[in-house]
Length: 370
Image (cartoon, rainbow, N blue to C red):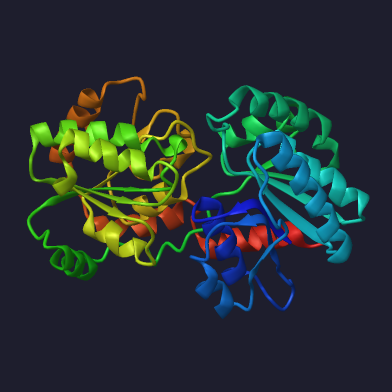
């Protein structure tokens, strides 16, 4: 079972989808289970693999305590009715490790925890942090295999003792490097499609939420326009910040310079079309979209709160989140003007750095094997 608290559109979902598409289905029978299903965006691809997302929660509860307790009850009820040999918990905070204890109690042979993040959101933050700290100490002993997407993620979820004893494995993102390889044909096609043949394109992709920091991104882009009016910003994603983003676009009077796209199955084409990728996140485990952007040869500008392991390409730069939007804009444009390299070679460079989906899935299959 691949388990996640929420099934929407994002990095965890992309990761799980790639597992389903690549894993040896003759050896492994895979199910995806989520407490809550919020999106059907991946359904068509999952159906091709003969898999669907099973939601265990009838009605979501308000408030973190009610939500956690309800999810725990539904999780145990589901596993009693649908036993499995191995469960892969895709989680981001310690309190969710409580699932490991339930799984062990019900006789599941191997419990795998996989940390995909490095912090909690802003809502009920004190309560979440308290639960996280208690949870990761209380339930760590029920975990058979500890995985994290980066060293920062490992430090966030697992104990110092586990890390020092090499009990935590760092698994790189599973991405289709060939799919995201730069295509001049796609770039020309997409620019013609949007009428942007002679424009410079800045790209951001991710859930519209506090973590991804798109409101600050708009400030950065507004400052970029003051220095170079030829830029267009494309933001791909959906989420709770959507209304605030549209209000800010209106306040800054840059609506005509920003293209908002909720979801797309053509992310690789947008990356080929773009000139640079900006991700000023407040925190990240190891952003899959950032790795995909580097496979496409995009110069990437990440906040310094993102793990340094996210840097694969020499054209990727970290900028301090504490810097002003104006300094971000100046830094980005100065580097852009100085860059000159062949984007078609970047995909091969990623493979040489271990981002080969065939290698990654074989490692995961070893972890699943009893």
